[in-house]
Image 1: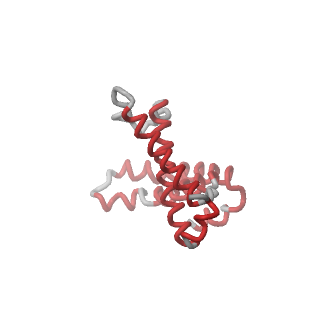
Image 2: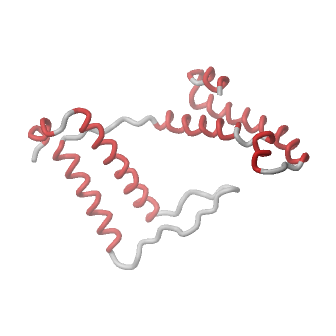
Length: 155
């Protein structure tokens, strides 16, 4: 099947839905390939990577990975699916904005819902979390410019 022949097979909504699904699969396959080539990035203070992705002996995993990629490529080409544009900056800024919301959920007052909070811990959080939030706001502004400044103040 050729791109020109495939155009009428899917309407625009169907093409978008299929593209989103296949793009997600493509992202996962690329991540698997990347993790097989090199380990995850450096660990943070609160993240420890366990159970590293290791290809089993033989070429089975690599062959299967290649087969998925080839089939994915064929479907995309046969149906003439167009690549989606994905803003890396927007994705990062959006994730950081979600972190702002999450920080607001771990204040001393909110943590009391999980049990009695040590007064020293409450005092510490009330002093330190606003500083972390301010630093996070600066980081977001560094990437987003003034576009999100008003939104950040509303969150």
